[in-house]
Length: 487
Image 1 (spheres, rainbow, N blue to C red):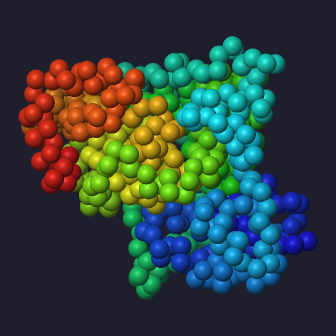
Image 2: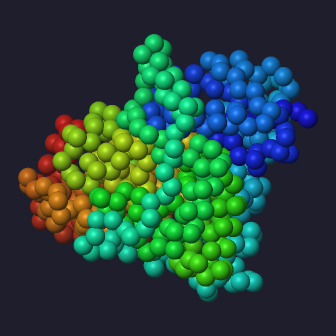
Image 3: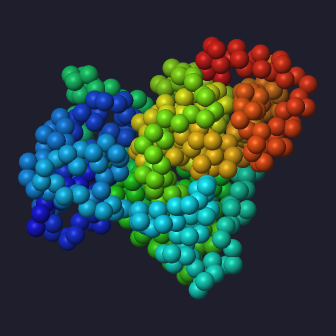
């Protein structure tokens, strides 16, 4: 049987044709030399590769480049980046198979997408639910409603620092992790390879056994309470009831189909409410598949689109994850989460980090690259549409109906950050002005012409025109942006 070349995000059994198929794994130093990844992301990927190398007929090759390690006939599943696909196509003796690790196939997505002026998650999600018979009761959605977001947007419970849910099973490091850490130290010391973020104990699965344990625990203990507060933030509870499964799924340790099936089974057996199960399945069958297909469906130049003409470079404090330089409590805490864990959940990503970057007019491609490098579950295909299109609205609305811009009022409602912050979410001008509140109005003023035709922005733009202190606000924010100081 031909040996199967597995990239580091294809490590699960669903990437093999038979359980005993021989495997090639490649540990490429050049990957880490080209970009400054988060230290914990590098550790997780290398640990996962080396743990996989202990299982079955596996040949692990450590080389500067992938090409240097390929010297025999191989098959490989379609890679997850254009650069890797181009490499595979150039290598002699390597047969590329259709992609695995996603639910909807490329042909199915293209058939759905062709001819549509705008591509929207809600439309794709309903198609995928029907097509794959997920959470369906015959021809109708389970419970009679496609979308239960209205049930899943509650603010955090009052007066609590943490949700009352058990923590996920802890990861126990082993000698492989010890060797990975020693190698990363040596690379930094001797090879000039650099990382961002803090080192720390491994927090996410590097083996299928660990990933399955996390999946079982989530479905049993955390999924039942996941839904209502999935968009909420608590300073003392960065995990909330989220699954923390995205790193394992994106490494290929879990098949998204099995994750979806277990979640739906919990609903069918009465072990989890529909609102939580639907919200969770929407993230995987919906968003995860959606952004994967958009990466390939949109033109290669999509990553460089910049419809709002955002040109500013990422400031040093942000690029280097210097959370201690930031006084705004929400931004400081979220940036510290990236620095210390390489992970925060989807609302801090979108409504704190992405929102701030868009308000300040940072280059969308640079923001996407930062997310790719800084998050343990970040890959080019994950972050391109998620950041360039949704978070930064740089495509002018091709995959999102409006900019996800919000002021301090949203953060005050959906978190407990504002109570302990030196800034006031109700103030937009002066020493106490919330950077998000002031930044929101500055963003609208700067992009008023581009957003005027968007019906969902009509009310905010009308509010902008009623501001009596707009000139003072813009002078304040222009000075802040010019200095690129941390807020």
